Length: 539
Ligand code: AMP
Image (cartoon, rainbow, N blue to C red; front, side, top):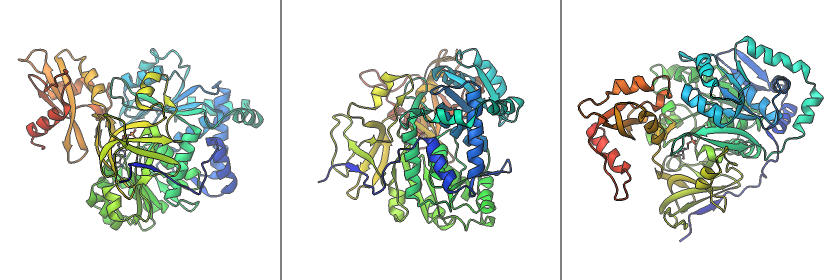
């Protein structure tokens, strides 16, 4: 019986490039090919143009005094300038901090302070929320923040105009100081306890993960990748942007935030060869009343990732969207993100029952969570990942890093998996009690702590319950301070509105008299979840 351990062999070596060096290669090799198309803005850049824009923005950041290692936050929905800022910060060695566009004032305030962000680059508003006002509110709590720049505003033009004060030679001097192992990106992921944690990734982490994701999809400079997935997440900026630039391929940004019709229209108009999404995005696209009217004949491949993919959806994506080479990826932000991926010639069974096999140069194993020993193939245990893709650590939180990366450098994912005899891996559950709502991860603890601040809440437990549209939705089980006056769903929603990201606001609220507990006094979430699903008629 073989053990649940696998290492991805490869004829192709890892890349030693920084993000900037990697982009330089693409610019030199494919100057006249398109690099970025922003459909909503009507903007197109070839690699030569993109390279020049990146250099100008990089010089502008230097002129604004941004030093190597300093943090620059970006808080914006998708647009071409997001990509520009990603590469410009990398060129000068500034650490880009991705801030979820759904974040509200209290979350923004936390990341500004925790990462010590020096410059914030933000949209002015998104979906009716006023980023300017929230940025202003959060500023008081962010002593390191010296400058806030808004897109489509004089402050952005002023920033770029500063490029004149820094020469190309000075930029080259700065780039020469960078090492591929330097931290270059912080991505906040919800923590099992309390506040989000800043997964800190190096050039080496993300350049290689993007490169190998693209290799396994067979990307070349002929590919055009439609990205309805957010850039603030690895799915957009690594599996999308870096997979593209390491192959001279083009990224197509269909819309600032996900819009199924805009995504399919962009595929058709831009002759995209690849389309990405979490399963719920593909469900929305396939569900469009005029789905049949979009010309998707250019599609060849794409990625579905982030949560389990229903078989029926996979069948339709292959047959009706013509994505015969679509891949499933599994991973997490802490591993840059992809650890396993299906291959373009895998059959439907492997593409639906599994999340693929280990990536080149990466190791995975499945261990008994109680003993840490590797389980035989076919048995369930916790999936662990080791290799170039494991993050440097959580920003400024060595203790939380030590909770997930062990002494032998294995990242413990908290996901329950089975490795089959053929090396393919299935995800069968989660040790952590994270909820995935429409592709957004929610750690109940964060929402619970916030709800605890409501005067009518004595105690609260948040669990995920099944939902037809989002896969899971949040239910808050509240122990009311006054049993005669429990808080209503509307009251709690109003309390969260504008302070918590919309996807963290519980859809359901139930008042309870007590929680099911273990002998050691821990709430039995599994039991609570089963009860809740029953109670809501969702079992
Ligand atoms: P994130 O850090 O936001 O990328 O979320 C990572 C988590 O999403 C993983 O730990 C898994 O629980 C889940 N996940 C990611 N990809 C898949 C997949 N293909 N199938 C099932 N769950 C997934």
